[in-house]
Length: 227
Ligand SMILES: [Zn+2]
Figure 1: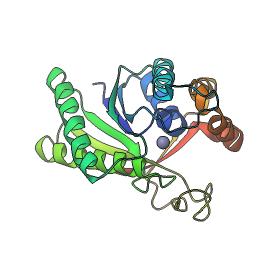
Figure 2 (figure 1 turned 90 degrees about the horizontal axis):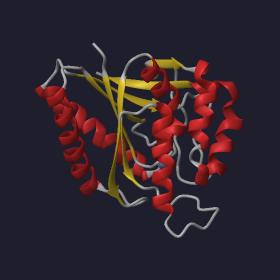
Figure 3 (figure 1 turned 135 degrees about the vertical axis):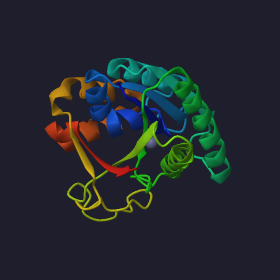
Figure 4 (figure 1 turned 180 degrees about the vertical axis):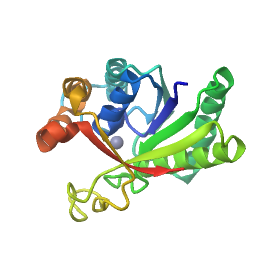
């Protein structure tokens, strides 16, 4: 039976820079994926001085979703850069409702995907997104242990981030091999991954840095898996 993946991320481009290799591979192999962005990313880089950056970024995100083959995309409309405890509870309720709607229409098992609970870069929105996802995951798993299978948190390995950085926010060092429970190799989808990353044209400075830094290994994702 096909599985359904629900990905929950704070910003349009988190999916592309973070987990597009895994999503592309899973979808090509038969999974169905739904993506949720909590904000429109309206506080992101704006090299073209768009008056409505959030609208532009949501269009870029739609394109990214199309390229990956995402079944449905949901933008929840929270304010970029401001996610809080109050938002976390509201996000968990809304993601829980969306998940229940999906559960009602299928017998497929459902798994969740988000970022490492350290937020990877340390961005508060990422931390709220992953912790809200963990809350939904464990709430639903308690009720429906047969249907809710696992939570995959995308992390960086210590080889890529040997120590913490303070270039912007406080960012943790990468995870050690005993913390990483899954490695997905989607290097065969390299060209699609690059296209997905480049669909976020307004964030091209970050995108090109990412592409240059990882080279062919851009197709490898590391996860901490909670069950
Ligand atoms: Zn982000």
